[in-house]
Image 1 (cartoon, one colour):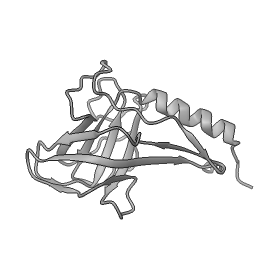
Image 2 (image 1 turned 30 degrees about the vertical axis):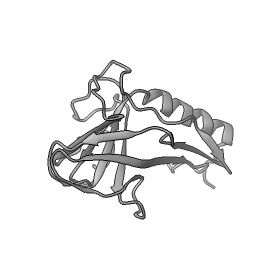
Image 3 (image 1 turned 90 degrees about the vertical axis):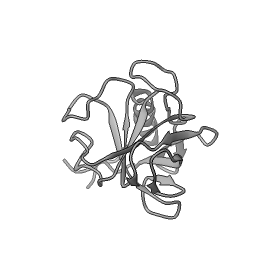
Length: 161
């Protein structure tokens, strides 16, 4: 039988993830997700999303992104982009975005790491299957884009060990 988690444990885990990623930023890449968020993402960086597209620096809360407070849905805990916030980027390279990496608010050189807090997601248009939804995924240099949604679901079934 699989190990199961209570809603209270899932909500605590979601709150811890939210806290760990507070005031972070997102980089968009042309390549698909890495095998795991520990590994570097390869490909071209298309843009970097911050709150309202403002300047961001590791260690400063200014223009950092933060998920909304977790919400319980059935036996699952949900984390999502706050509906009232504009998570925006200006393209620094032309291309099609395939993946996104949410970096916590610390210096992170996108190297292999077992200690840095990161979250990876596939990117798609509004009706696609990616965790990160955007109005479109192909951009030109200087074009501005925004994230419509990023939803993370913590389920009650823990993976087998």
